[in-house]
Length: 621
Image (cartoon, rainbow, N blue to C red; front, top):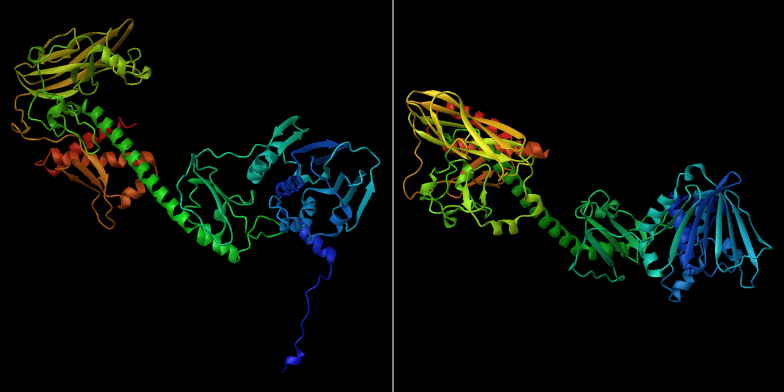
């Protein structure tokens, strides 16, 4: 059994110094990071201009870094004090603008090329150079015997390793713009890259974030020092990351690589920017890792309020995006239904009548949907018919007409022109449709039809268009055969009449047809009594009901269709935007058919559902 007297102690020592130096030299695995180390040495030396030259000479590829800093005063000290940087002493004396602290940055040339030659003017004015060879423990310092001609240092690495030759000037420029962003800004150094291979000269500009700067974030307090944050709401999620920096030099391009930051909001790719923590301890070899000591733990605790605030902002943005998406979906679904009603019998689809008891609706009588938008009775295709003589006002000049609704609203021409933007003006005639395209009336009854002319983009075309109506097949008669409106009078015998209209604008002629079914026994659906409020096109909202089998519910009083967004079908459909749109459209069709045909049999409901989905999905865009 060992006793206390058998315990031995001592001090750790390096057994093989060269082996340790080799391990340190090869620990830098990123040649771009190595080039950034060389540039940082120039900035630490007070350089205001740094030039990186990439070229080829005597069949050897090389990289040069030239600066106008204070130069190297003692080559021998640099070569014999690896791991004991003089910069640490300068920082202890208060020079906080210096980044280096390990004294091993020069060794990273092993990851770039075979030899490294440093040339600089000493304090005695003599130009000297020091040559280091990869894998060789010796170094050589000699006077160059040439006029250096300026203050500063020149570092040359040649030949470059085969895998490093692909580092173009653009790659170096982009890396340094992010890696040394704040150091370039604070020091005012100008970094240029002369790429003789591509014959280009580039200037490294500090990377600028394109998103929206986030203001009024909570104050970060940490006992180890100040923490600087610059965060933006990203415009694009492709390259959006939050980098971790130390005194203006990037340590990690993405802070979510650290386990304690691998969660929202840091890994959402919705926020970009940087967090600068000057008191962190870096891993010396690679300088792209953080020692997770007490200072790091304190940083994690101090940043917690920022994390909570960012999650709140992301949740607000998510809700706003969902609301905007819902408005867009509702608009597309509504437009598809309106287009479908042009092809369907008006008499069968009555739920879209407006909330009014007056056939001649005023602006005050127009209801508003759940999103605050007006719901027009004519939007449904259920147009109250009236002859021009019944109208309280005779239109003058131009008028605003809803192409799919047939509404006629007098409006002064001057006001209309002021309200229109350039893109709102219609182009040439492209197509014409008849409203309604299909209808059912009783024998002897009259039916008003309207021709709607549109351009290629679907805008209403007004003005220099003439119309010609005629009956292609079936009985009955037409009045107003040369105007926008035509009135069909059914014969006394049942039939199916095909009515055609031709729209003519210059040399352009387009046609459309409509079917009118004349029946002897027309079952009229109740359309509401005097003074009752009838439904408009409903809106929709989400209601999370996990585990429930219902997909949608129609709240008639609120005119809202509630969609179960926790249903498996909704989750499945949401994987693709168009599939989700079709799913919501079919739920609309289901609820509207059920509401409009309460006394129909199951077979009739299914037939109506197929009919409405067919005509609606054709118009989804």
